[in-house]
View 1 (cartoon, helix red, strand yellow):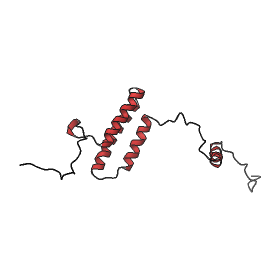
View 2 (cartoon, rainbow, N blue to C red):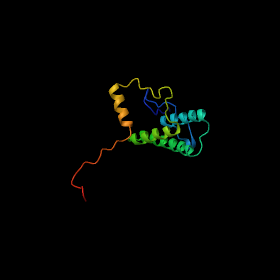
View 3 (cartoon, rainbow, N blue to C red):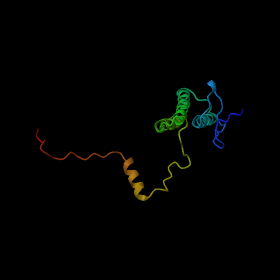
View 4 (cartoon, rainbow, N blue to C red):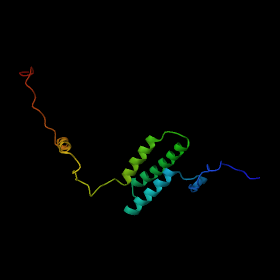
Amino acid sequence: MDVVTALPGMDIPGENQPILGGFGQGATEKETREAIAEIEQESGALKGAKRTIKQLAISLAISIDKGNTKGRAVANEAGQLFEMMQHLAPATDAEGAGDDSHLTPETRRLLDALAAPAQLDAAPEGDAEGL
C-alpha cells in the first residue's frame, strides 16, 4: 500500500539540508550562513565581538524561519538581522563617496546648511537687564 503525503504538485521541495537534531535550514538561515561565509572569505576569520554577532545573526535567522513557518510577523527580527549584518560588513561605496552629481542645487544647499556648525543668535534685550 502506497502512502501519499501530499497532493500532486504540492510537495515540499527538498532544499532543506539536515543539521544537528535533524532539522532543516530555512531560507533565511541558509542565506545568512552563505553571506557570513562570504564576509569571512573576504576579510578573514571574524574576531572578538564580531564572532558573537555572527552567532546572534545565525540564531536570529533560525528564529525568523521558525516564525515564518508558524505564520508570525517577523519584521522586527528581520530588521535586527539586517542591522547585525551591517555590523559584520558595513556597506561602503568607495566609488560613489562624495559624488553628489545626482542632487539638485537646492538639495545640496540644504545638506550644506545642515552640515554647518550651529550659529547662536545674540540674546535679545529684555526685562532682565539690571538684575
